[in-house]
Image (cartoon, rainbow, N blue to C red; front, side, top):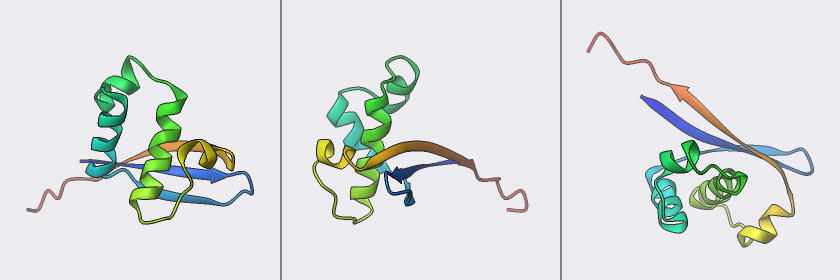
Length: 90
């Protein structure tokens, strides 16, 4: 199993990591009218990465500015993936 997260790095150097949950994925697909995997393999735009960071932060309960205003304080957004080992004893 793979878990996806985004690291949001602000202009002031602070950063937070937010999970990419099903709600975030569905919001992405509705907003961009394409599947997440398709967007990151065939149609990748940096906007997709930033939007995921914004939506993941918002979905985590943080009050955020509208997307374009939120971008004004952002230095970078990085996508991280962790592979969770399967429990072979189960």
